[in-house]
Length: 325
Image (tube, rainbow, N blue to C red):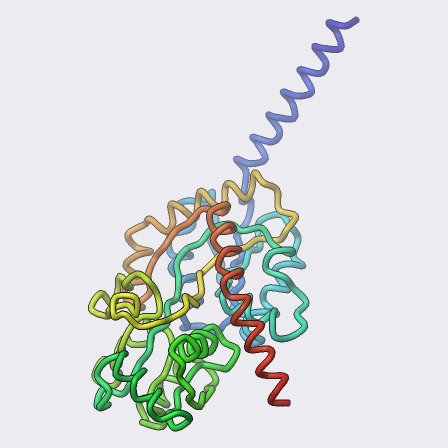
């Protein structure tokens, strides 16, 4: 009797393993939808379309279909994916810095940690401090010195006060004891336009927005400890000896919380191969965007550590907002 029970248990275990393996091998069974919370042509969208260009080879010959749901700093798109059937066929490409900050300054229907599993990281958008090409300010140190000597007189552009770059700019000002007037625009390109139009003294926005405008804007330094691979001539603030806080946006693929670990593993393995593909890197390079892969567990750890360092900035900004009301 004991032997019979053992045999039955072994058979059941083998059947479960075989079913799981077959189920995993058959995934994905249909096109995978990647939802982007921004319009076509932007940085996040460019990452998604670069992934889509090489995806079928690594996704069981299924296409990766990009769906744009712009608005609300990516929160509605994230909510859409969080509520989707957790079978791994609907995922979200998050500009994760923006998503995190958006959930901190208003009541949000979604949480990047509670409502998702992390697939992987595919790249990162990095901010820089820019001036007009003709500006008399030639270095980051000169900018800091002049701003300190003239408190309240300088103006700087950002894509939005609580955007990732807006917070990077406020952190930069705070770390360097700069009192200046922020001029929030509605997006990175409009912020760049304020610098080009000489309506502000400097601006803080993504280094990738330099592409095609090198004769109009000049970066003074990257607000990140490593140089950007597509803008290797731009020194970091760390190299220049200027204070800064590391505020940027990792590009992270997320899936609904209920997706099985087996399917998450398949998606992550595909992600690793896609980001290593020459065509993926070539498309990103054309857009001035860097590729940077991290596995799901590595990305989760990295993202949590980053948000911990960002929390004091968020708390300080919330305080200053309450004072202004």
